[in-house]
Length: 289
DNA sequence: ACCTAAACCTGGGCGC
DNA sequence: TGCGCCCAGGTTTAGG
Image 1 (cartoon, rainbow, N blue to C red):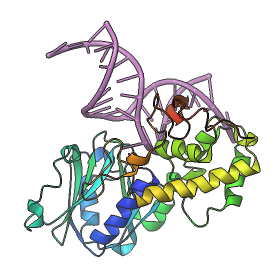
Image 2 (cartoon, rainbow, N blue to C red):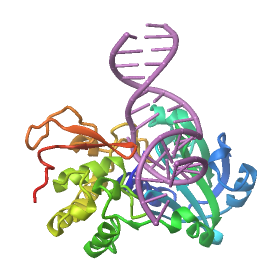
Image 3 (cartoon, rainbow, N blue to C red):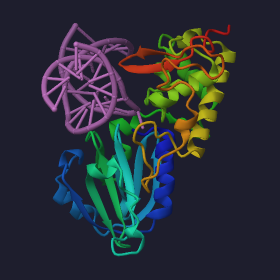
């Protein structure tokens, strides 16, 4: 489900809502999602720990706990994190959660405040790992992650290095490769390349300095705007209160195949890049040099 | 080292 | 209504 803007929205909310709270219980009906330990052991190990901070790299969520532990979560395609108010409080009577997301809750953390953190996951691809901080940071999938796409350390120089390293790959593939650059997925790679005016199929080796500059600026522009809009709810993404984002209202190409390009009126096309769809305007994104 | 296809799951939508 | 097929925000793994 979520790409960088959605995950950023989620972790900002979590820092406001559950930072400082204490985990006092855990329930799951899909233990397969919990890596490396049985749910009973997981429950025992997490209980009593205070939530110190919530961070992310790309689409990976890290909930820092007391005692040097990290709860590492990945939402994959359909994961949602919801924070629900104390069941006994007045607020709980408000039915925020009439939606589908509520039917697929497979893991629940009970907190001392009475709130619950709930992991909804229709397709059950989500991942949950609890371990010592250094062991989480040492996981192969974490170690090999590329730099976060909105990190200040992601400079134009770094972007050019990535392009040089993958001369023969289409730019659309590079943008969504988590091991080169982390956070961008299928929605934003299409939107970024439309913003930059570059065809997704263009090979990195054929991209000029000026074009690279345009793509680099579009990465920051599109992702930051999407964060401001609290993500894209094209399908079923919801924030921790169950509310949709707003970026779907301003999508230019993603899932707009057959519709007219807002800029030039040309019909938007869909193609395959790897196993995934990519959307583009064949006129606005035609080589400009 | 690199690329591709399948696998992990469930559900929506479409054509027949 | 129902069946079969394609599609879906992501990653991992197996095979060539």
